[in-house]
Amino acid sequence: MNDYADYASFVALIDDDTHSADLLTRTLVAQSAPGVQYYGNAIAGLSRLKAVISDASAYRPALIIVDLKSHSNANLEFLATVAPVLAQVGIPMIVLTALVEEQGRALLDHGAAAIFNRHADRDAYRRVAADIVEFWALTQRPVAVGM
Image (tube, rainbow, N blue to C red; front, side, top):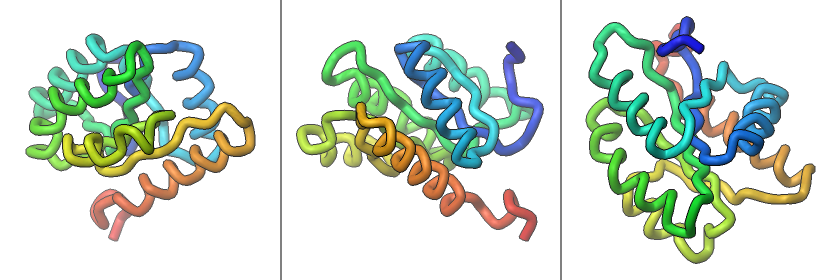
C-alpha cells in the first residue's frame, strides 16, 4: 500500500477491526464515496496522520472516519489526542459509534465534526454510509469540487 493517496479527494478510515474496516470501505464506495484509505488502528492511524500532516507534499484526506471499538472510550481518547492537530489543518473528523446517547456530547466537545450511529442491521448500515457520503460532499471546499 502506498504511504499517501494518489488522488486528491479521499476519506481516511481509522478502525481497530480489519473486517469492519473492509465492510465500511465497500459500503461507502457502493454509496459513491471518494476513495477510502484504511489507516489502521488507533496507533497506526495516529502515526500515519502525523506523517501526512507533517509532509507538505502529501495528499491529505478530505475527511477522517474514526470507528474504534477496543474499549468504550477508545473513540473519545483518540479524538482528544488528534483533534487539536486536525483543527489546525482543517480536516473534519467524524465518529462511527454505537454509544451515541452515552458519548455524543463528549465526542463533539473533543472535536468530532459529526457522530454517526453504527448499526448491526444491513439496511440501516447502508443508510448511515449514505449519510456519511452526503456529509463528506457537503463539507468539501469549493476549490475541491472545481468551483
